[in-house]
Image (cartoon, rainbow, N blue to C red; front, side, top):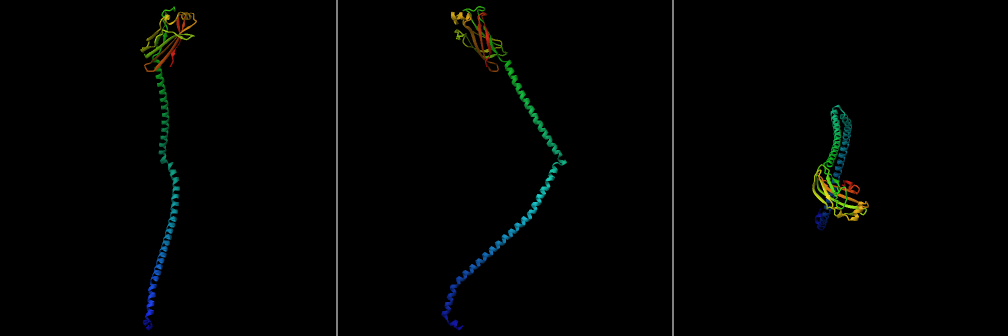
Length: 273
């Protein structure tokens, strides 16, 4: 004791050493405390994971019987549903369904019948309309080709083309065009009438196109060849008109002069379109 009390230099040296070691001891102590805290936290997390896993396993184990039971209940309920479908209390519903199907089939058949009847009615209406247009339309044709000096044919003879409406209704906007020619040279004769226009040609009415006398249309040699039947004198005519249904018609006519009879034979007298 006395030695420690009176040995001042030794005491000072020990105090200095303790003062230097104090921070080192403090850092070691704090590091150990942190490590212990981390180990404790990891231990807690490990225990928590284990607890969660145990809960999940328990839920799975508990759910499997429930799912199995639900599946068994579903399969057990299917026969019941099918039995209920065919049960007596559902027969009225099935009867309603069958009646509806039968009604649908009958309606479909009725629609087919109605469709066929409609088509037949449309065809009948078209035929009736065509018949009306055919029977009630104007029908303009060549009625005759008179010669003014008949039964003689000479230089003063005048040839006329007479058109007549043989239909039951009027013809509108009537236009005629006629010409004379001789064959085989197929030469047109001069002195023919110009195209004739008529606003209306009523049922039974006539329209005449007249040529000049033959002496103005033919020279003496040509006239002699026609009389001697060396050349054939012909006429060609066309008439265009509209009926009361505003349909356009065109008739083409032609004929051949017969010197022995002093008349024309009509070869064609029909509608062209």
